[in-house]
Each structure stands twice: as structure tokens, then as C-alpha cells.
Image (cartoon, rainbow over all chains, first blue to last red):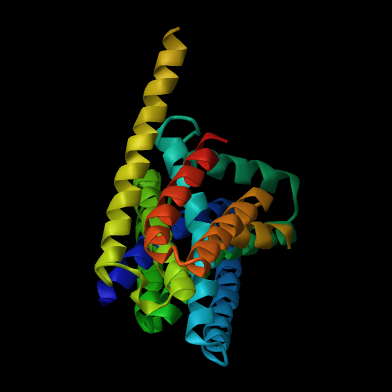
Length: 242
Length: 55
């Protein structure tokens, strides 16, 4: 498996999550200042870094390859199915697209009711919860592919890109094509999850075409997901006309 | 803590669905339907994902 197969999904998933985390930190910074809001974000990132090192190490210790594959495969399926389903629903117009401006205003409204300590906690919790999904992808893809540094680099590069873009415009990053990225990442994650789960259950030779099966799964979920989303959109339009 | 678990594992339906798919895959492999499992599992997953999208 190439480094890019690990770097790309980690980078894209992390971009989406860091943009959401940035919106929360930006809103909090207007109440308690950049220094305190940044300290909350850094504290949350510290917790995530510790979690990545600890869980990455624990998963590699004393767990057989097949069991590790099953644990990671199932975790990726639990996560990927949700991402792909949300992206399909948004693509079909059944769910509103994620709105960074709305998130920003809502966070500001919550902050106006609370105190400075509560604002710090909101920034900390926001970065931690958004970062949890990044943590899961970094650990799952990194440990299983034996490329933990590549997965970590993907997440950190995304963080750097979002922080630089955010520092430059100092406004919610609303132009990120979030749903397209979520569709792509959801598809990649479900493909990895399917591949590793079945390999752990059926053994190494289960997939026809070896590693190429991963690409076939990706195309299947991407085209299948897009076709179904388009069909759902058309169905909704017809219902609206009648 | 609730938000932590929900972020990682989703809700009950998500857990139940993935659990069922893994169980079906294990049963198919156990009963010698390994070749079929690699076609059935992705179709089941896409069907389930569609159901979640419509929910």
C-alpha cells in the first residue's frame, strides 16, 4: 500500500474536522481573546497527541494481526458508514449542508450567556470532539498500514493549512467543499473498513485481485453512493411537483 | 462522555447494523461461502448506508 493511499484520506478528513474546530475557536476568541482560545485548542490537541501515541502503541502490542485488522476494520466501518450516509443525504438535498457561518453564530450566542471559563471549555471540547475523528483515522490507517508517521503527517499538514488559511482571513472558512470531501473520505474509509474486516475474517487470500480490490471497492462505493444520492434527489423533486 | 462515544461509535442503529454485517460475513465464511462474501458484504454496506442517509 502506497504512502499516498494513507496520506490523502487522512489529510482530507482532517481538513474537514479542523475547519469545524477552527470555527469554534474563532467564535470563542472573540469572547476571551486569541491567546486563551488558542490555549484551549492547544490543550485539546495535546490530549489528542497523547491519545494517538498511547492507542497506537497499545494496538501494536500483544494484539494478533488478524484481531487488529478486525478491530480497525469495524471501527472504520462504524465511522465511514456515518460519513458516507451524511454525505449522501446532503448530496440528495435531504439534509442541510454544513454551514460554518451558522455554527459560528450559534457558538457566539452560547458564549454570550456564559462566563470566560465556560468559553475556554467550549473551545477545548470543540477541538477535542472534532479531533477525535481525526485521531480515529490516524490510528486506524496508520497502525494497520504500518505507516503511522504518514497518517500523522497527513493530519498535521491539514492542521497547518487550516490554521494558516484561518489566520489569513480571520473568518469562518466557508468555501471549503465540505460535502464533496466528506463523500470522498467516507467512501475511502468504508472501502478500507470492508477490505480489512473481510480479510481478518476470511484470511489473506479472500480478495480477488489482491490490493487492487481496495480500488474496486472505492469505485463501487463512490459510483453507487453518487447514483443513489442522485436517485433520491430526483425522487424528492418528483414528490415536490406532485 | 456521551458525545465521546457517539463520535467514535455512532448510535445504537449504527452499531447494530455494522455488527449484523460482520456477523453475516463471519457466517458466510464459516459455511464456505467465502467467494460470495466479498460481493455480498459491500452490497449490504451500501444498502445500509442508503437507509441511514434516508433516516
